[in-house]
Image 1 (cartoon, rainbow, N blue to C red):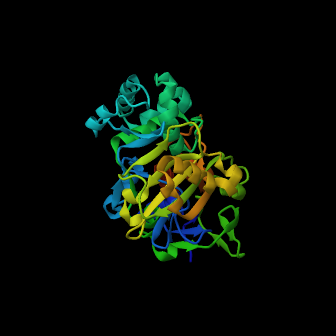
Image 2 (cartoon, helix red, strand yellow; image 1 turned 90 degrees about the vertical axis):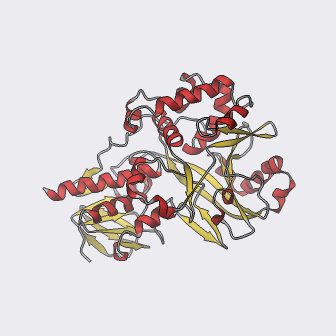
Image 3 (tube, rainbow, N blue to C red; image 1 turned 90 degrees about the horizontal axis):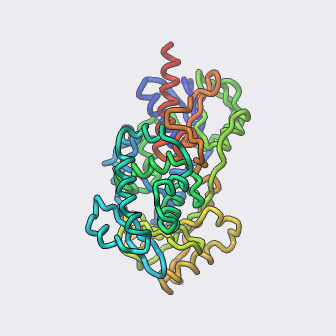
Length: 415
């Protein structure tokens, strides 16, 4: 098969690149080392349960995703716009005051921050919704922690809400992530719904893959060498095209092109349990607002989308802090011990389904952060790079990075 462009990696970035090229009439072939498409955005099936490879959510406000994905086909199921925060043996509800004003009034005096903190959230929301999304990346940059402190949030609010919430989003409980990302994600939460597809987060990649011909994607094909625009596979086969796009994770990209410098990755662990009785009802994200314990957040996914489990069963997803992998053998026991304090002895009846040790969970996004338009996808003659580490470490960043790589190729082919 002859093709114009070879794409290494069938994650969201690679699939977005191929989809954009296809619409422009440029042929491409994706080479994926794994057995299916999706990269980190994959969903495994186990005895009727849908297990995303790590707890992941999707914002309907993502600007790139709006243009390339069909939301109706994804059959999105929405989370409650807020969270439940575990603190002092109780679950306290934190609500979006614009969507659930009554709930916000009811929770205004809970111990998850001061009343002043609640008003500062409204002010922050107003600021991030003003102007264009790109404007957020032009402001003075600092860390998320410094940004929250400069806006006047109390340390109580930071520790009990923002550290588990934004720390879970960025997989960075220290909140060293760029303030640009904090503003961007807060805008996404404020202007759209947070959701999961009915068939799991892997449905994002599957939808993009279905727009390509089956011959355009070869799975189980590991690329071991790139020289110019010639690729060598682990099988010894060589392929040559007019252009090559590396759409892998950062560490794999640096193996293929040693002169590249990519950022380190944050790691986390995600555990899945099944139960016949949900520990909480309602489509909530539950945050650990206390400073102790291994659990960062929990979600009963079947309370958001019942499709995540077979009839009569519920699926519980538990995400731990970023330093939890130091003692893998005791993670499940430590999680159960903490959750028994939250929900009582019923946790003993939960069946452990699977644990995902995510060593490359998300690229580090500490300052200085590349803006969504700053990084040139071209890294050499006939060679381009795309992935969420080239933009924002989000589904939207991956999709947009793939599109920009394709458009750079399209402009070259026209000359």
